[in-house]
Amino acid sequence: MRQPALTSTASFQALETHAVEAEDWELRGLFAADPQRFPKLTVDAAGLFLDYSKNRLDGRTLELLVDLAQERGVETQRDAMFSGERINLTERRAVLHTALRAPRGTALVVDGQDVNADVHEVLDRVRLFTDAVRAGTWLGHSGKPITDIVNIGIGGSDLGPKMVCLALRQYAHPRLTMHFVSNVDGHDMDAALGKVNPETTLFIIASKTFTTTETMMNAQTARAWFLQHAPEDALARHFVAVSTNTEAIKTFGIDPANMFPFWDWVGGRYSVWSAIGLSVALAIGFGHFSDLLAGAHAMDQHFQQAPLASNMPVLLALVGFWNRQFLGCSSVSIAPYHQDLNRFPAYLQQLDMESNGKRVTKGGQPVDTPTCPVIWGDCGTNGQHAYFQLLHQGSDVTPIDFIAALRPAHELENHHAALLANCFAQSEAFMRGKTIDEVRIDLQSQGLSLAEIETLAPHKTFPGNRPSNTILMEYLKPYTLGALIALYEHKTFVQGVIWDVNSFDQWGVELGKVLAKKIEAELTGDAQPELHDSSTNGLIAMAKAAV
Ligand code: F6P
Image 1 (cartoon, rainbow, N blue to C red):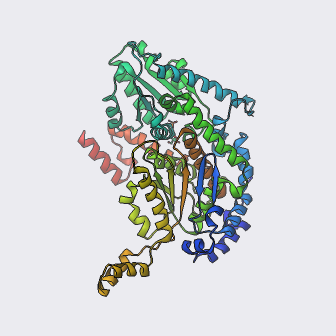
Image 2 (image 1 turned 90 degrees about the vertical axis):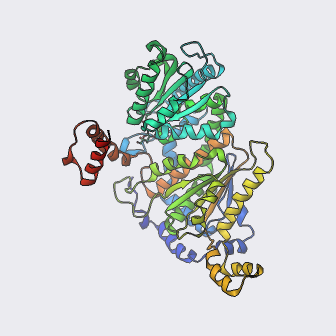
Image 3 (image 1 turned 90 degrees about the horizontal axis):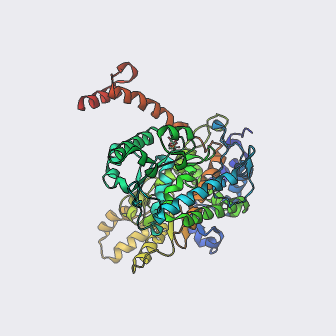
C-alpha cells in the first residue's frame, strides 16, 4: 500500500508543532524538573538495558513519536516481515533473517517451503563441520589439524563475522587463528597468506551471490596459492563455501559436500546468523554460536510483543528519528566502551547506511525529509583523545550511543572502574555542559586575573544539551551480543518504515561497480578516452604510465 508523504501525516505535523515548543528545552532543566526521569526513560530487554533519558524529549514527545510509528504502520510491517511477506519490493524478496534464529520447530512456511526445517538442516551441518574442525578430526591434506581459518568475503560476508569473532574472542578456540580478507587490494590477501601454512589452513569463500568481484578475485588467488603447495585433490580438505549460488560454487571447483547454503531472503548485512557465520561457529564453537542466535531471538520476541511505548528497538529508532528530524543531527556516533566491540561501529555503518541510505520511498517518490544519518565511531576511551573535542564543542550536535558491559571478562585491577567512569562521565558532560559562569567561577578559584578569565572563558565553555543513549549489558557474551545486533537491526527497520524506504535493497552500490569494470579493462588493455571526463582520463593515464 502506498504511504502518504511523511510530512503530510497528522502525527508528523503534531510532532512539528511540539518540536517548536521543545526548541528551548535544556537537558539540565528536564532532569531537575523530574527526579523520576531515569526510571521513566529506561527500558530492559533480552539482557540489555537502554537509558534514553539524556535526549531532549519528554513524555509528550514520546507519545507523539509512538503515534507516528503507529500511523506509519510499524506493527503491521513488522508482522509482515516476520511472516515472510515479500517486503523487499524492488527485489521481490521476503526478509527473514529473524527466521535464522528461531528455535527448531517454530512454524514458518513461506511459498510452501518449511523455512524452519531448512534453517535447522543447515545449522546441523554447520555443527558437524565445526565440531570436527575444532576437535582436530577434520585434517588438512597432509594429515594435520587445521590451525588457521581465512574467511574470504566482503560487506555483509565479512563485517558481521569479523566483528563477532573479535567481540567474542574470549570464547575462541586456542588452536584456531582467524583471518579475514575482504579487500580487492592485494595487500590484504598478501598479508594473510604470509601468515598461514597451506597444510593447516582452511579457506571459507563467503559470498551470498558468489559473483562479487573482490571475493571472486581473492578466492582465485587463494586457490592458485594453495595449488602451488598442494595437489588438486587436496582442495576439498581446505576450501569450503557459503552462498546462495550453488551453481557458481560448483563452477569454482568446490566440493558440493563442502557447501553451506543459505537463501535469497537473507540480506547480506543481515546474514551473520546464517552459514555466513561459519567462521564465528568455528571460532567460538557451535554452542556459543547458538547462544548468539538465542539472544537475537529474545530481542525478536521483545520487538514483536512489547507495546511500542516500551519496545527497545522502537524507542531507539524513534529517539534517533527525533534527533535527525527535529534537532537536525546529520550523524550519529557509536561509542562502545569495550575494546572487543571495536569493529561494531563499522558493522553498524553497513547495517544502517546500506539499509536506509535512500532518498526515494517504496513508491518511487522523493522522501520529503532527511533520511539516514551518517554512522561512525570508535571505542571509548580512545575516541575521547581524538574526535570527542568536536562532539563537545564543535558546531554540529552529534548524538552518541554509548555501549558498555557492567563486568569485564578480564581480572586486571582498576581498569574497568576507570573505563565505566569515563563512559558515564562523557554522557554526563554532553548532557550538562559547562556554562560560562561556571567557567568563570572555576578560573577565579584558580587565582586568574579578570582579564585572563575573560580571555579564556569562551574557550572553556561547553554548550552541553547534547543527546546520548547508553546501552548496558552485564557481560559481553554471545547471548547479549546477539541481542545487541538484533536491537540495531530492528531499530534500522523501524526507521526505514517511518521514512517509507526499502531498507533491504542496495542499488546505490551498482554504478561504481559497473564503471570499475570498464576502467579495469582499460588499465589492463587499451584506454578509451571517449568514455570519460578529463579527470578520470588523467588518472587512468597516470596509472598506466606507472606500470
Ligand atoms: O555491494 C554491496 C553488497 O551487495 C552488500 O550488500 C553485500 O553484503 C556485499 O556486497 C557482499 O555481497 P556477497 O555476499 O554477495 O559477496
